[in-house]
Length: 357
Image 1 (cartoon, helix red, strand yellow):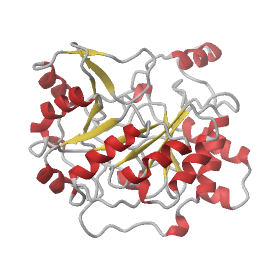
Image 2 (image 1 turned 90 degrees about the vertical axis):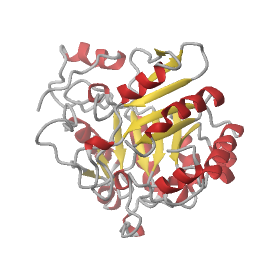
Image 3 (image 1 turned 180 degrees about the vertical axis):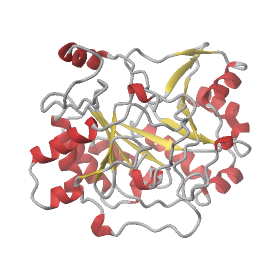
Image 4 (image 1 turned 30 degrees about the horizontal axis):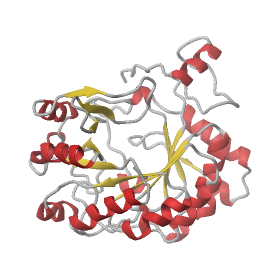
């Protein structure tokens, strides 16, 4: 595997000063969650369910999905316990994901519990179908931001991509979220060659008109049907070129920012977009994320099948220190890159909805 060059951000520099080089020689037993390559992990994705009320063509087949038994899903108390331990280890932000997190009953209670742990940022990714009625309650519980998925601004096409749900419901949900103070609102767009890539400029105009941050996401090999093909993805670089030719862009990313999206402002000051080029321009060198699956496995990479089961540890009387060491081992085992562009790459056995985005 070709090593991925690690970008040097502030906290990584501190670790490197302490260890005398770019790599960490042995797994720390105190301090931040750091891997062998000096990457500090301070972002945790919490999947609360593998179920979803939609069947997007790039994620799930229309029929035949098998979901986890409820007994295997972490309780809210278990999720909050892992989140609290992660906070003690230096994790600063959490994002609730699924599946679709809003199909899980009582989600506002989990938000309230997690927000009380003192994270700098608590956010949620949703398809928007169930968002409008609970946006105010989520904000009152301590949620700060939402990302809303929307892959077309044309009602019929939206319906064909999502297979369920209506565009107007999602657009109304965006407005409801903003009215509740869940801002800045980000709109996630998965581009598929020949299906919705002719809407790139429409979404750019949408960003300019609404002030919402539209993020164009490359189609990744994480669909449950296993039908992903490279020629279906639209490279982030192409997206930028097509928008820049109409509305000039300038880079807006801050030094040390480990977020997956490369940010760009319109030169005329009229809004912002982002591109997540996980396949064509991997950002593994600055990755700071861990994931907790709905059934209680810690994953250090979307594209790795390596998992560290925490559910059984929680349910067999494991201490907080035991869980903390499991988190450290999970981070320590992280590879330098996901290897998607290498000949030996094997797509993960679990799909995005089972892992948590």
